[in-house]
Image (cartoon, rainbow, N blue to C red; front, side, top):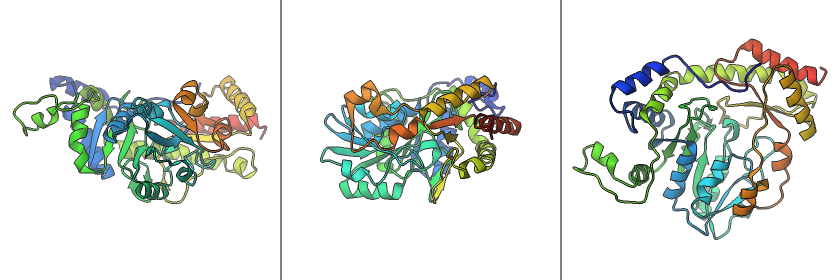
Length: 376
């Protein structure tokens, strides 16, 4: 069976985990946490990067920093993971879902303005598959209506928009280092902060509401409780695992891109004949080969294709059930405008195996199996 995902391993993870243990500091903000944060800051150009226990927690932290409160509204696509919405629902906000573009599966930037009300506090673009939303338009709207932009860049590490790293364009950016992502620490994430003035409060909230970070830097002689907060720090053991991969980030990027490009090349004929659809990468977007997907004709065809692939040793999966169709989505949010593409396109999309170390021969087997289903 060709697995859909295999968590990335470069070979030095165990060595660094052992080092973390021998450092006698395996809690948060140890040596490896600092190395990862410094790498992210240098690579992305953000003012500050704080490792978190998950992308969910990074988004929660951003929602607190943006002062999201009961009665506020937050605009986002419905085609996303539940954490994108949960972070704001926990603050008492109403989630306003907007339809997606069928070409990128990202929020339709031209539909956002009509969804803005006097209660709107933030726009949350989700960079699906590491392909950027149209951030120029979104940033213009945010400036016009004085809104926060919180980027869900869970899938966007090492991807960019006109040369700007995803996660650094809005006020806050949220990364994921879950085991299904390009770079992993098992469970984990990071918050990217654009404005240096917001860093100190972010550190306090992340450290249970204390100024402990300033204490460890020697800026104060004792630390105390100064704000409402929580514990968003990952263990340094997790960070040690991640550091092994960040050291090899370009190697992982190139390996995944090689598989992505091979898929795309081998599916060209089917796409040109209109049998399936393949990913679209807009001008100015540098993706990161986070996933390779194809679109079948409809839900029935996709269901049959998944079964055919599984019966022939290939594990392929579909992705999100749109949030506005879920019980909690109906309770905590509303869909603004027409659901022209969100549900329809989500029912067509099929994710194929893609991970660091995927063999070229396995990519060819996957493509050949898809073609056999369509009798090509």
